Length: 344
Image (cartoon, rainbow, N blue to C red; front, side, top):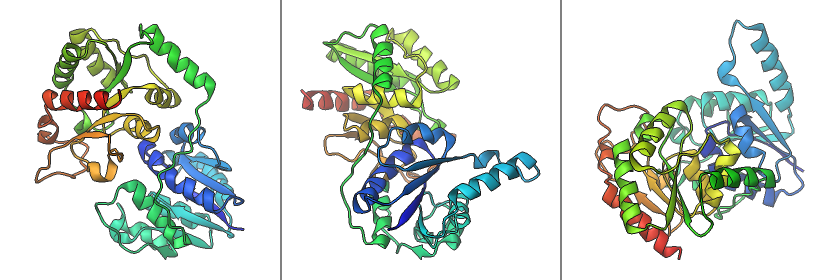
């Protein structure tokens, strides 16, 4: 029997995108021990995933060469992942994740071809490497392809996520406290994003709200945010439109919110990936990232994206942000209305 060590530390959306590969691995090796190395914040996602034998949190970003405490934590982490009889699978493709695979002393350490890695030197730590794959392949499909090194040919996108009843209940209460009547469709507007280049301008959100309110007065729209900067922007939209702003939600509550939504409008963020995992209708707003690789993957999902010479730059900051500015409120409103009609 083989044991496995999955290495996918971050980000939250990328962890979601790795779940179908985990589900396929579990299906083909039902008796194996499968452990997962993840950044501490990612444990909130993996807590909701069925079938993982052990979640191993790591805080690599806090490790310091001259810190005795960091070295103690490093030694403790190394002991936890050490197992020569296991197979390590690096879905992240960074030098730090490759080092984790190497430190595990796994007999087999699997990873992508160096040309398909964000940090090509990570391939130095692998014993088995996948041949080059198409750049147009969705990242979920890319992760599934890595399993072909184990003889697993899988194309199904399965997300073994089960939310706790208490999380669902606390989230429903927060929505109800904003005045949501059960007979109105819940539309979540996720106005924030970790990258500046993924944030659609506030004035566009304001125009979108006004258009949707005019065309579909029966909708109940709420604003979702994550950090203080996003909260400030959401507050501006709330002030101009009057639609309610959600209180701060935990990672698990964001997942429960997306599961309950009748429609999510969002940039390329964790909330979008979670909604897709729950098969909820989405309208994705894409600028610097490629929706073919990172976007929604079901036929009914909608995407607003305008190809440019600098598309797929994957830059976190930009002086122009023309790619997002090309997405108009009229365009997004039309996609939202199409999605809502299709779900009726």
